[in-house]
Structures are given as C-alpha cells and as structure tokens.
Length: 377
Ligand code: TRH
Image 1 (cartoon, protein in one colour):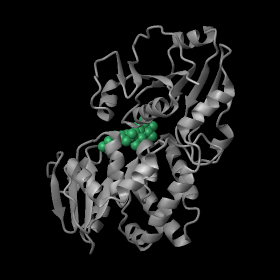
Image 2 (cartoon, helix red, strand yellow):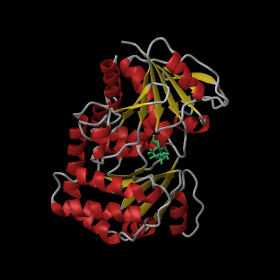
Image 3 (spheres, rainbow, N blue to C red):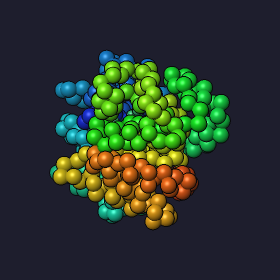
Image 4 (cartoon, rainbow, N blue to C red):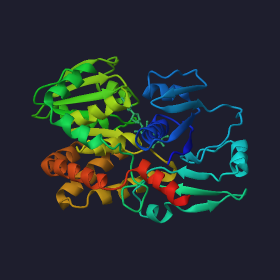
C-alpha cells in the first residue's frame, strides 16, 4: 500500500542526522514504493552525502525522494500519512495543527537515537498523548528483535559479499578514490572525532612488525593526525609513511562509496550512529568512537553495546575488545590494548561476521516502520 511520508531532519551537527534520514528515505522509496518528502534544514550537510544535489533548491528530487528545504518561517503544506520527526526535532507548530485537522488520521513517529540499552525494548513503539489529542509514537532502532531494528538495504549483504570475494573489484575501487593499496598491509579506515588516544595507536602501528595502511577520510580526526606527524600539512591525497605505517588522506566520499571503503578494510574505526551500523554490515572488526553526551550518558550506551556484542566471544577476546574501545573513548594511551586485541584477532574477525549475520536475520528498520504503519491503520 502506497502511503505518503514526511521525514523531518534538523542537522544538529556532523552527518549522522542527515545520513540516517537520507538512507531511510531512499529505502522507503526504492524497496517499499512509498512517496517520501525529506525536510532538511541544512542542505549543505545533505550535499556532502549527495554531491549531485542543489544546495539552493527549495525543492528537488533525488533518488526518487522529494527533498525539501525546511523553510523558516514554515510555509503550510498538507501533512503526509506518516510523519517522522527524526531524533526529536521540533515540528513546526502550524504543521502539527494541520496534522490534527487532517480528515484522514496521521501516524506521528519520533525516530529515536540508536542504543543497545535494556530499556529500549520496553519503550519501543509506545504512544505518548499530546496536548492536541494526537498520539506520538516512539520508534527505537536497536539490535534486538524487540526494537525497531537497523537500517539495512535488501541487497546490502549480498553486494558486500560479492565485493569482498572480488580482489580486483576492491583494488579498482580503492584506486578510484585515490588509494594505492599496500600489499600485505593490514588496512584500517579511520573516521572519528578528535581523540587524544590516536598518537599512542599510531606509535604502535608505526613500530609494529607488520605493515598497516591507514585510510583517513577528511574530517575532525585530521588535526590529531597532523599533530602526530609533527605539523605536516594534510590535504586530500596526502600519502606518507612512518615506519611500518602508511597513511593516506581520502576525500569524503558518497555513502555507497564509504560502504565499499569499509568492505575493503580489515578494521574500521567509525563514529556516531550511521557509520557505526555500516561497519557492522561490513562484517569486519570495528572500533566505535561514540558521540559524546552530557553527564557521560554515552558511556552507558557504549557499555550496553559491548555487553551485547561480546556474547559468544571468549573472555580473553571480550576483554581485549572492551579494553581497546574504552581506551579509545577515554582518550587514553592504548598501545597495550592494541597488542591484546591483536592476540584475539582471528576470533574477533570471525565474530564480526557472525554478529552481522545474526543482526541481518532481524527485520530492518525501514521494513519495521512500514509494518508499524500497516498495523496501526
Ligand atoms: O557524522 P557523525 O558524527 O554524526 C552524528 C551526528 O553528529 C549526530 O548529531 C549525532 O547524534 C550522531 O552522530 C550520533 O557520525 P555518523 O552517524 O556515522 O554519520 C556519518 C555519515 O557520513 C554516515 O552516513 C556515513 C557518511 N560518510 C560518507 O558518506 N562518506 C564518508 O567519506 C564518510 C567518512 C562518512
């Protein structure tokens, strides 16, 4: 059944808010034949993910999605059948009034941030009665069957497996984004916020017996990388070697190219929400730099995820993983944690694929939203 959807995205910072909503919007169109409008208040952030988009256009169509500049002040429009406010962004008052006045009822959802905490299952799908008589439902993405699931396109894992089984395709892809693959090196992608733990990790990689190739998309971590390199200017395409460590700065690429980069690497350092999920679909070990929250609430989220992710790992591998992730997120010296992690590497690599397969057996977030709507009707 074809329904109309309005997805509202307010870009708080970085690319996660728009990254998640743009991915969801495309999937609702491509896989569920829904009519989707995506309202974005910062088209500049959108253009980084979708370079062919026009950052000035009030209205444009990309990948079958109607992209709307979220106007200020708001211009009245007819509300859609399903309205999603992403990450509790505040909808325009007049739009809410129009939802209440609409003859056909509207499903109003707040799409929440991703968390592995226990309480998520209990809160997922709960309604909250609003002052105007409408109910707003809380939709929680998550890692367990009682949650709203994770964004995962239908063909994603098949595409990923075919790509990982094809070394020539990987090499061609890497070259297309300017990477000269280093034979025999452990390949690592690095996407993170500023992090004082980086220097100790780079020291360990540079003095290791095995070579590593570190691929760093342009972004916030470059300042720490530059400091470790003694102030060498870093721009897209910069390639340097320090001991056994080969470093290359990459452009910020399209979302689908970023997936391929993750699929090419043995370890992916990711951050936020969307890259974190994509690294899990890559089926390779990952390192998560969690988005910092007030009162260190993010540390509880980190521990909740570790608890879930470590199920099935030996105690030694589980401790190595936790130690490495905690040191990274605490900005601490992590050379010893890295050595401990390497000792458990084969087990962690196998576990990453198993974790991916288990999560992929659950309903994905876009489908869960469509089912939620059909049940609600
Ligand atoms: O950019 P992030 O840190 O985003 C967020 C937001 O800050 C948000 O406010 C916060 O709540 C959330 O984190 C937890 O990290 P994230 O979520 O991984 O988003 C990055 C997006 O950028 C993701 O869709 C992948 C994409 N990307 C590319 O498309 N190309 C690239 O080269 C890279 C490095 C990333």
